Image (cartoon, rainbow, N blue to C red; front, side, top):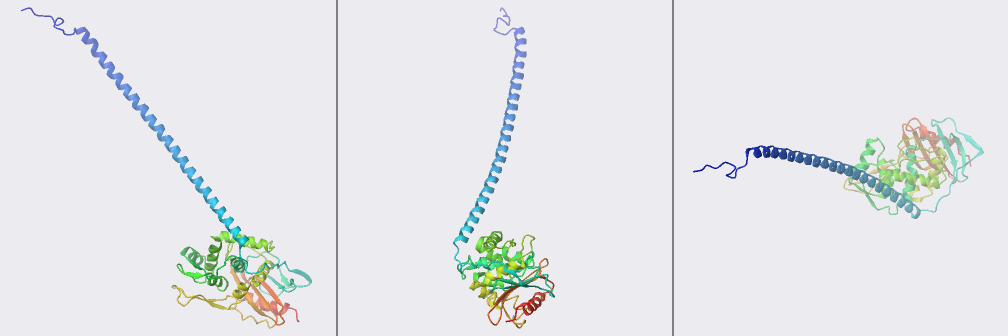
Length: 367
């Protein structure tokens, strides 16, 4: 039998086999490089996409913050607009009193021999300064501030029987600040009438905060209403930061302008009644089944007739370490003449009372 050569049997020559093998290896290397390059490109693309997403997310957060800030500003503007509109349409309890600064005359005396650093006595009927001691100087009014708080409240609250519910955000800060309080508790629902007595008699900071929130939504917004009222009244040296009189260097007045505020308040029947009250018991609540007995810080320190020539009908005390002991009172003589007296920056709880008695006795003209 004839034996055939491998080439004749259809096999590939050895020379061709040796050529194809390196070619296949070369293709394999090229493929691997291509895949690696694609993977790198894919990773780079993914990195770029993640970076873009991060930037978009950051911008989205910044936009959201900007939108939230804008919405907050708009909400505040709407609130101020509502307050302004309410002030413009509020039902006034009386005709608007017109009280000018009292005039000093040749008969105006200088007050001496008192503890208080500042004082002014004004004849309400003549609108004249009877006697003064630094009566137009800047003072910190402390809780005499609450007389203006009562004025703004009286001109905006239309339903004195409406209930207001206290919470911890109102009661706790007053205690923590060491301020005087009426004693209302978190969860207690109290009529606005009782709250106004809580402002005036025990000089309650809890009550003033409740009034501010009820009328204006916040104490800052209420202080703006107080400043608007001061401007309406022609007070040029008075500025309020809060409703209670807690110390702030931008919260100030003068004895003369505190006297004007007191005169204004006494022409509002509701406030005249409240500021003239010695004691008042609030309505019963779950927290206070027998109510709260509120006592005037003014009339717990004086009867009102100690000077012998007039009777103190109404008053409001004040104290902070920076303001010292303060007192504003309104008195009437037996023949019906009315006077308003402000003293400020005295040392000792009873010092303003003794000063008031002394000033009324010495400086009210004889009939």
